[in-house]
Image (cartoon, rainbow, N blue to C red):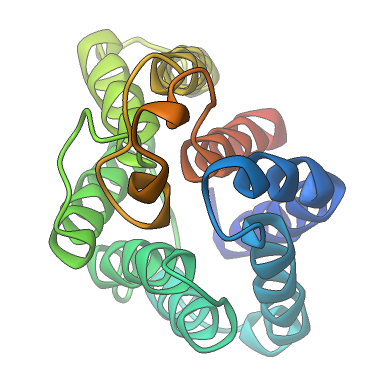
Length: 206
């Protein structure tokens, strides 16, 4: 992906989050604050207003700007977590105007480390990590010199949605969802769901 394509993808992500805003909020109503979709949509609406000013910037600057925007506009834990993820990815892409599949996987790798650090969370606690980590692992496992990027991303998307399904089976131990304890079983994590929509959108844009 070049800079223009990255901007197109970010616009598409904003549109997908807006489209799924009510559903993400419904998921959060059950085990969280009931504002995940609303907050994410607000953040990406603000991102969309900034994208035209980034057309001549490198990919690192674009991703860092997205991250800082999400931190400043998205409420709850989602802003700091998604903001950190994008900022970490931006640091990896500093000065680059092309993003390869290997670059993308590295971005996801450092984004996950950022989320772990900021959220003080690990896999298996009913968070966005339960979709992010399986997606990364699946893409790494499928990566070969002749692999098509679209195919690798589709494998990652499938693993992410499997991770979302997995969150229905476990008790939440992080964030507001942990307050409902065993009653969180049977409900999927909103953050894992929004991440899966984001990765799916990236794949669909290729």
